[in-house]
Image 1 (cartoon, rainbow, N blue to C red):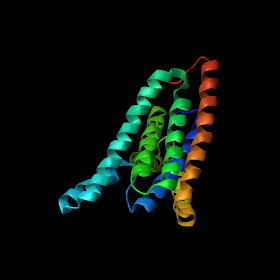
Image 2: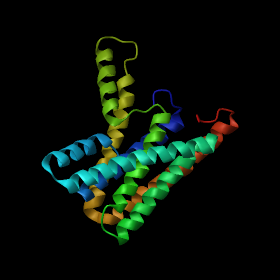
Image 3: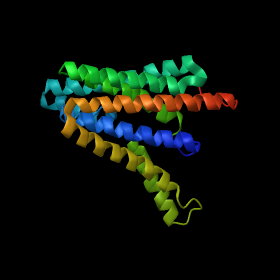
Length: 218
């Protein structure tokens, strides 16, 4: 988010909160699997193979493939929609989240989690296109910027931008954990509704950027 305009930066912070909410919700619901990050699932995939626990490896592998599929779908959609890419991708992600909520409400199993992971893959593309990094990379950058500030670099507060993203993600994760504990599968609906609201916000930002003659990147 280093160079994002203020409305876009605020929207991305809200999106980080939704991402944290969804990831914590899925983590609690699925017993320790992630839908927003592939690295943790890659470790569980390898551990499942190494220990001979085929079900664990299958779940982790399925979530990794779903996350990647979401990013691929979002890339195709962004290319097709051009200046309306942010709103279109976020709308598709919100539909995935709402579909996951509907499936989790009626059917037990992995289907809802795979849709959650697909939606998160779409969300990752939005972060990437706006210059935001994955959470681990963000924390490394924050530490690097903080070290620079302590050594007298001109940008004394660059680390605060990274801290804001991490803190908002963590706050969303706390809300997701609490919601799952209190509401169970019904907590899925809040993620879809929040994402749909953000889809409208991004659509408005796309429209404003187009009117100004500076459409979003394709």
